[in-house]
Image (cartoon, rainbow, N blue to C red; front, side, top):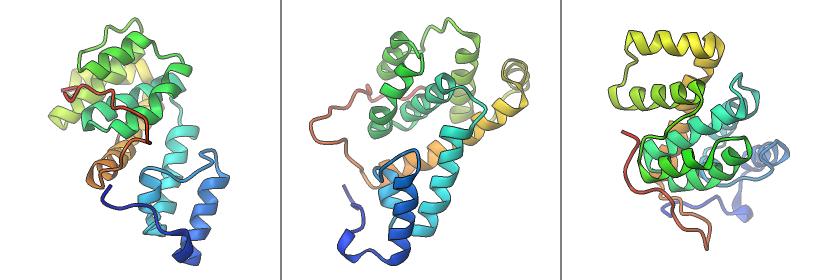
Length: 186
């Protein structure tokens, strides 16, 4: 790890205040990218607020938002993000066959059209940096305006998370092993 969390003994009052906000919220703890961002408490506060919306206030059902998060973890090869969200995704109803395929770098065989469009939108946007008109129209038709906007917002937030985790080489917790194959969803 290139940068650990701030030392509790030397944290500023602002760092402690933001840490308290995060630990009192639905996350219950400060770890991963939030621990890195806490070096800049204003960033940590703004990012955690966006993250709280993306995770807990979005119009996307948890199954779809967790699929999106796992797909972003594969795109960015973020083992920490994968480790943190795979159990949540399975609990939310994402099938193990989908998570296994994603982890192996294979296109999943989706039984659900909404899951397939979420994955397709993310992988296309990540590789082509645009959504072709036909894909956009299909996504809008299947997901609706609100869920499509929330999906793109979630992708931006998890890009920030993955970039932070990768740039600062945040490791998996001790005793955990990486599950991603080393190939992206592209």
